[in-house]
Image (cartoon, rainbow, N blue to C red; front, top):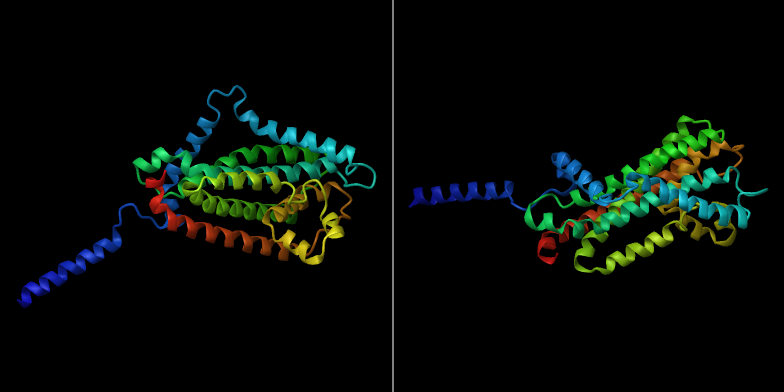
Length: 300
């Protein structure tokens, strides 16, 4: 009797240990991503290929949209409203373009991450992969489109007299990390919600519409400060998009001017605030995503 009881206990312990190690259909979330980098690359290539299938211009559309936006906003803001003339913003075309490409990256990354789960419904229903791979692939596709625009920005900045400096480039890189993290966190959150409530897509469209106006792309922060109380300005700068746009202004625009422009607050403080907000959003997004991902296959 004792021997049988001991054997049963030993087998139960082994089963419990085995179950703790092997859980089909479960993952460790973002921690598991490094094990699937090859699949991530395949998803990125698939998404790019599908997006430009049957397109005559192909990747050239990467340049068409920001250039079109630039022309429209430069004519409206720079010429009609006079922000690019006289006592307006120095090197306004460079100021404008460096802000536009950051907000465009955020909008594309956030929108595509939100739609990524439903867009890959067939894969999710048929095979197991860490679900975070899909929004992460969308984030990388947004970067594929963003990188050529940065090249255009650098060439344009050099033509306008920009002199690169190490501190400015570091500020721009940290700002980009912040907006990447922020977009990915929001994408995880709304991507999970979108599986159950399609209203999430409409929310992303609204965010995309106002994002460009919630950052100093066309105007300066002093214009906000002149018409809003201090606490509104602090909330404005708690927005990682605004900080990232200003970081690109510091990195690629300031040295093309007489450098008399004053940014709001110390960069170390602003960048830290931005990173804290961005990673907090990422944490909330990942927790929500992990909580809901078990029901994705049956809800899609």
